[in-house]
Image (tube, rainbow, N blue to C red; front, top):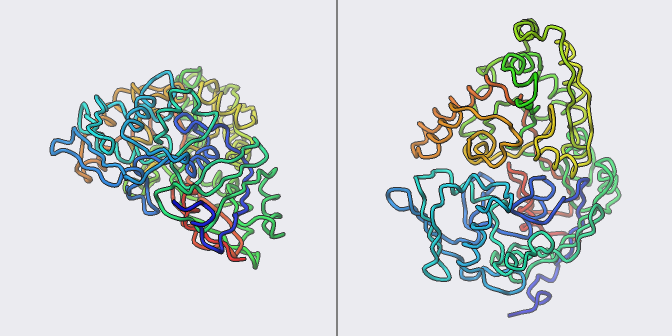
Length: 489
C-alpha cells in the first residue's frame, strides 16, 4: 500500500471551498439540513448512489439483484471498500447500519423508507440479503442517499456516530470548527480510486455576497450558492464559471393542519387559491426556477396548471374563507430559516403580502438554521417556509410525511387514507406507466387537500474559478462530483 502522498498525482492541490451555511451535525442517519448532507456525502457512502442522470449506480455495493417475486434483494459488496481507518466494510456493517436506521430511538430521517425490510442476512462478509415483507419498487432509490449511509459497527457500538465521522467515502474529516471551517483530506482507502486533489478546506463565510467577493479575489476556488440573485452575477465575472442545473428540491409553504384554523380544509384551500406562485418565484427567486407541484422529478412531474387552484383566484379564496366562517381573517406566525435557503425570508414577505388580501395577518419569525430544524422536526409552527429535498421517485420523497407510518408525521401533521393507499399502491407497482398514473392521482389529491402549498423548484448552483475543472453537478444538489475535480496552478 502506498502512502497517501505517494498515491496522489504530482499536481494535486487542496481545493479552497466556501459556503454560507455550515453543517448542523455529523450523524448521516439523522441529519436533514442540506448543508449537513452536502458535507456528509463526501465522507460516508451508501450501498448505491445516483449519478448525474438520476440512475442508480454502485457505491459500496458493486452489484445487486431482486428475486423474481421482488421480495428478496441481494447485494454483493465491493471487496475493496474500506473505512478511512483501513478497516474493510463488511456485510455486518451494512446490517448494523440498517438496524440502526430502523430503530425508532435513532430518529433516522429516512426510517419509513425501509419499513418493508423484514430480515437482513449476511451469508458471508461480502453479501447482504434483505428479505422484504412485500415488493418494494423504490427501495433502491431510497438506499441511494446519505441518510442510508453505511457506518462502522464499531462506531455504532461505541456510540460515536455524530461526534466523529468515520466513513468509506472519498474524503475524511480532519477538522470541524462549527460555523468557521472544515478540513477534509483525500481518503487513500477510498475504493473509488485516486483523487486529483489532496483535500478540501471549506470556509464558512457570513453570506453569499462575501462568497462572491472571495471568488472574485481568487481566495476561493469553488463555492456552493443557494441565492439565485448572487448566482446570476457570476457569469459577468471573467475568471468565474457558474454551474447551474434544475434541482429536485422544492420551495414550499407548509401549513400545520393540526392547528386551528388550518385544520379546516376550506381555510387551507383558501390559502392555496390566494397564493400567486409565479409572483413568489419572480420576486423572491428572481425568476430562477419553475412553478411546481409536489412531484418535481422529470419522470413523474405534471403540468402545474392542471392542479387545484394553481392560478391565483382571490375571489374564490375569499369565498372559501367566508364559507369557513373566517371572513374576518386570522393571525398566524410563519417560521423561516435565516440561511437555508437564503430566499426563505423574501418568500415569506411575498406570501405575507399575498395572504393579507384574504385577511390573514402573517407574522414572520426568522430563526437560525439549527433552531429552525429542531422546531420544524417537532412540528411546532403555524406555517413554515421551507426548502425540502427531492428524490427521483415519489415514494421515498413523500412517504415519511404522508403515510400513516411516516417518521416525519410530526412535521406534516396530516394523515389521509387516500394518500396512504396511493402511496402503498405505488410502492408495490413495478410497471412505470401504472406508477405514473398512481402518483399522478396522489399529487392531485395532495394539492387539493392543501396541507402544504408547493411553490417552486430552484436551480442548484455552484461557482468556481476557471482554474477548476471536472466538477459534475447533479439535480439532487450533491457535491459528490468534487471527486472528479482538478485544480490547475
